[in-house]
Length: 110
Image (cartoon, rainbow, N blue to C red; front, side):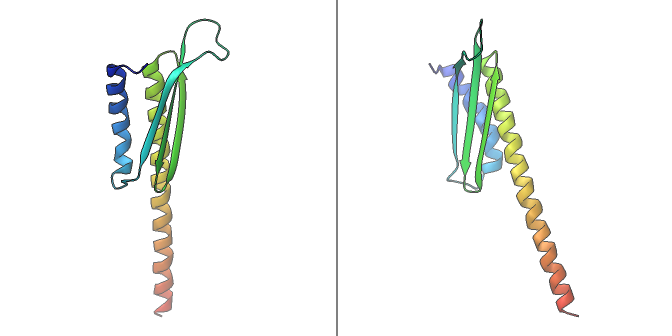
């Protein structure tokens, strides 16, 4: 059951992902939180999944801890890490391609 406090917490955590998706109006973020009992003999184990779909691809993160807030923290930080990695990879590939085009035109002019 989703409480108001948990909904507010999820909203604050998901806002951290918007830094990477500022100019993408088609971006969708799906969050799933719950308990799991697989392989667990006592106590609760909480699981959080974050799936971000945007025009440049998608990012998926999953985390499991003994608190729901901790699981959500880890999943969001993992999703941020993945989005940051994809952003820098795209930027580096663009710069490399631009450098090769520039080098081609320098040789072409001689």
